[in-house]
Amino acid sequence: MDRRSADFSFEQAAFGQGAQCVVGVDEVGRGPLAGPVTACAVRLDPARIPKGIADSKTLSASRRVQMHDEIIRVAIVSVAHATVDEILDLNILRASHLAMLRAIAGIGGVDHALIDGNLLPRGLPCGATPIVKGDARCLSIAAASIVAKVVRDRIMVDLAQQHPGYGWEQNAGYPTQAHLAALQNLGVTAHHRRSFRPVHNILYQEKSLTP
Image 1 (cartoon, rainbow, N blue to C red):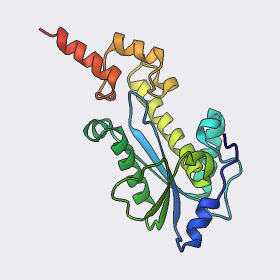
Image 2 (image 1 turned 180 degrees about the horizontal axis):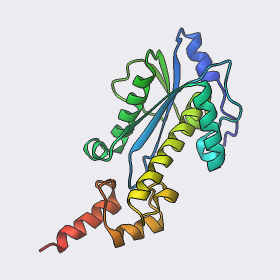
Image 3 (image 1 turned 90 degrees about the vertical axis):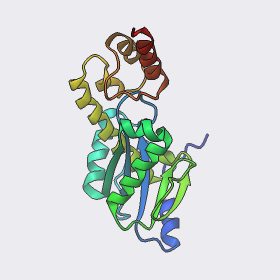
Image 4 (image 1 turned 90 degrees about the horizontal axis):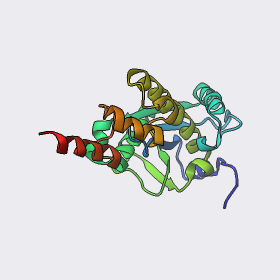
């Protein structure tokens, strides 16, 4: 297993090929049963890279918030989403790519995008490099992962206040046992992803029981 820290080598390689505006792009929220999928694009200033940037999954919640605030302060950041309806219409992969495209568009003038994963979104307006496990290898992608995670978690906390009982303030919409139990007991909300199997199965049961 490669345990090296994320670095700025991917960005430097893009600069070396003539790119001037290089962003890292990541998304969060492909696995949850509820809520949007959220993407972020970050353009780091090589002279003002915050210390401590790492894959958001390796940071505590409080540390992620601290890093989010620092990244927002010193970098150019764009956050975008794809809705539950778009996830239903497109599928989760295409919806996450749509959110990425929207995040990149929010920066403006991007020459090259460093994108987490092994697939590139269709219709990119710039050159791009897919980077497997990019949030652990590339500083700009790691920064994007932090911001996207904090923003989406806050959205889910807000939605939890509107729809109590599902535990979204703690599980962010992921299929925990408590969330699955609440789905059975409370039913499906407008913020649930109706194409995802546990939600679809409950809707199908309800339809079957309807005379």
